[in-house]
Structure formats: C-alpha cells, structure tokens
Length: 147
Image (cartoon, rainbow, N blue to C red; front, side, top):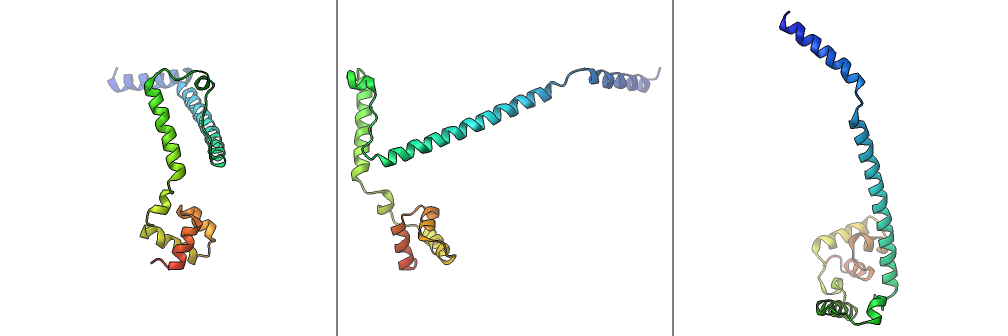
C-alpha cells in the first residue's frame, strides 16, 4: 500500500477513537471557573468586612486592641513588648500630630484638577472626594484661583 493511504486510514481511526474518549479539559475549565468565582466572592466579603472595621476604628478614636491573654499575664517575649510599645507610641503620635495633608503643599496637578472640577460645576464635597483633599483645602484652592 501507499504511504499516503496508510496515513489517511490512521488519521480517520484516530478521529473516530477521539469521539469515544472523555474530554477532561472541560471538567478542568469548569473547576477553575468555580474556584475563581468562589475566590471572588470571598474577596468581596473580606473587603466588606474590612470596610466595616475601618469605619468602626474611625468612629472610636481611643480604640486599643486588648487580648484576654495580655490582660491576665505580661508578655514573655521582650521583642513582643518592644513591638507593642512601638505600636502604642505610633498611635499616640498620630493622635497628636497634624495630618500629612495639612503640612504638605498641594501639588500643581491637583490644583488644576480641583479648578477644572469646579468649572464643571461639581460640589466642594465631590471635588474633595475626587482629589483626596479636605473640603477646607478645596475651598482654599478655589478661593486662591490656583495660586
């Protein structure tokens, strides 16, 4: 027989055999899709919970984390004590220090953005949200005309 006829018969046989085998790629695709959906849902739930916790922390300015173990017995590890002291000092420093937005000068790009948003008729609150400035800073930029 001719080589081309043998190859054609082998190809037809392989095509017919392939119809009888299960396609495992579809199962894997479905599993990956289900996994990605579940991860997406879990991520959204975590973001929602984190937002709630952040809001609670903002509402309680004197919030301190106290575990039942730390109340009953002192920390055994001196490194842990140092870390806890550093965290407490940083929390006290942020309470007494002015916010970074008040001490930093406003960049010219942000000033031009604020002025453009004002020209478009947005409210000061909306401009404040979009530019990450306080409403007072937005009022100052608008009053100064960008100077």
